[in-house]
Image (tube, rainbow, N blue to C red; front, side):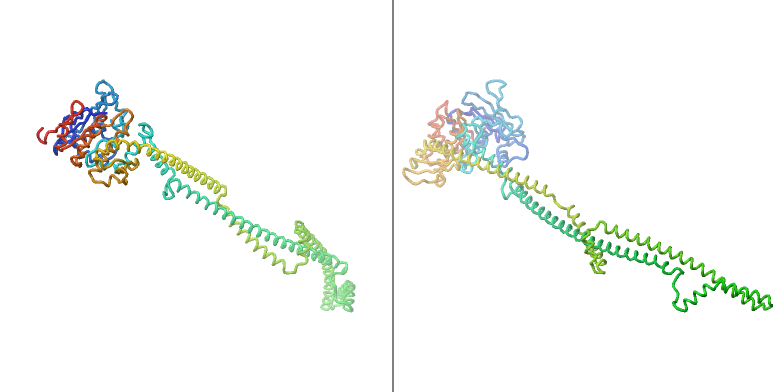
Length: 601
């Protein structure tokens, strides 16, 4: 690739100004404030444009905007460039830097040929994509101001993708470095570390620990529940045993009561036979007198009554009435006595019947109480002391109450009891999740290890290429002082030495020598990083200002030699460089362009 021209319309202090260029070495000379840095930036923007993203501008984009937007404040800001690719295609790139919407890349010779879709990067066309670079890596390799030559060391990380891509994949967009970056990001997001509280590795281990603790608590709760259940069963057995003992004692007591009732009924039934004339009277003469009186009572009553009537008739009225009344009274007494004896006999028979019925009832109840009981319990109860029934009933009530309370507590425990199956399922799920995350971590770590080894191999392959390119010019540029070098592709550190001498870091040499060596490294990177079949132009701003006269001559000769393969555009304010260009450059391949002084057009 080479620039044919760049046009500022408007850009910085320029409005509708064009800088024409040749394919070889272009020396653009101008005094301070003549616009060298503006054209340097315009070349970069004309090829690469500016990225288009939502949100606020980056610090880098703000700095570029503030330095190079038009001074007139009209709001317009645009630049265009015509480039020729190695396949002969000429493309005109136009970038609307103000609005970043009207940008294009069209064929400069053929109508209707639009190439912007093939070089889109970060939302805008980027011509450096034809070189296998992007606007950031192109800026680091090919677009260099004098103050930025050593800045290559600070931007080494930005070039790693391009180094990987160029060395490992022949200019494609996939690199080991990019793969490592993506894998590392994926690992951070999908695995994380022990110290990342929201990432899967930490959260899955916390879930595993929580599941183990929950299962342990569940087991403890289950064990406690089973222990209380055994307590309830023991209390139930004790209550049942005491209830059974009390029931046996009640049955025995009922049987004894029934026996007593039966004996009373039998004794009552025997009394009428023993005392046919009613209840017994005093024995001896009293009994005989009473019996004789009861036998003689009707006769005495009749005689007394008759005597009373006779006396009344004999005119002994009052005495006769008294004697008759006594007779009649005795007769009445005798009659009433006979009736009481009969009633007593009837009552006695009824009482015997009631006693017998009560005895039957009590015996039936006793049999019902004894029927469900163990005969051995009945046997044991018959030998119990008299007060044992009351004690057993009291103990049974206490045991029943204790059992009821314990059963209620057990039911509450059952309500709150965690599920063993759920706890085991959660532990299994947590273990599976942790194993999955750990397996993913191991897989990613192993993959990254393989890629790192591949990256190391790439570095080892790249290092000799960069070294060989730098060595083409190192002895001449350093005046023969340094004849050997080695390059670390990861850090882009260059070590140099003279013949057989110790290695020295180029960054620790004099400022001028270090700049010369790292300018050579940029030439090597520009040659090595581009896509096969393309050549990267070099855009240098005062890149030789720090050299002494002798080394400056050698470096200019080197750049002239490099321009045989790739276009070199060197901006300078130095008179000796202009004098060298007037003497050495020859059209049409090379060109010296002298910018007008400020204020002269």
